Amino acid sequence: MSESPPNVGRVIRTALIVLPFGTILLGALSFVFYFNKQEKVLQRSIKYAAGLRKDLNEADLKHYESIVTEASSKPGDERTKSLAAFVESTLGPENMGYEVRTLADPANPQSAALALDVELTGTKRPNDVVLVLCDYLGADTARATACLLGCAHSLTGTPLIRSIRFTAVQNVSALKHYQTFAVSPQDRFTHVVLLGNAASATDAEITGPLHLQQRGTVILRPELKGDLLTAAQALLKQLNDLADRL
Image (cartoon, rainbow, N blue to C red; front, side):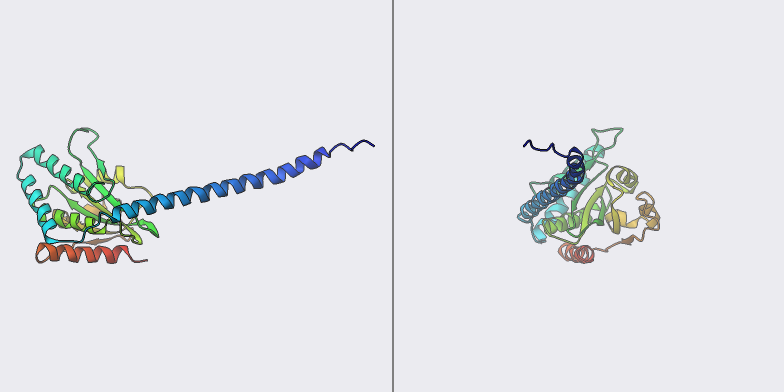
């Protein structure tokens, strides 16, 4: 007795039902593998950076301050390039474990960075960003830059709820360029902490270029009182409090 031919319609119907579920399952599994891999990469990065972490200390802070003071005494473009290079190299992978983003002037790519930043990405609310902003060409830049660098070094590899972004710009005028090329639609600046001469800018001069009007962003201007170590310690505590809250 010959076998009956397969029910072609049933096979097709079964395939139409099973194949989409298989595709969905494979897609879901690929997302799981992807995010698991990303999480492992993130954990490795955190562990590596944590090995470079260094507590605030007076010697390092004074070293930073003296280099910025010396570079600030150089003439014109040499001064700008020296300061930008120092901040970039100090924050970089070999010293503090950060990947530095450097934003040059599109009209003059060979010039010193208009802005540069590094980010300690938050673990639970990475899109909530505490922006620490210092102008590296300001007259009062040495103390503020030293505090920024010291806090960045002390926090590297530290898991915090929100992100902290350490940003140095030539001056407040560079914020428009920074917003255009470095701020993504997902970024939500919960706080902007102004250091150095940037602290003398009005709220409008900060929120305008960064498009933060009526966004609920809190502008802070730490006074950096006392000796250099005390000032940096107070700033570090403030940044920890801001970034480690839900």
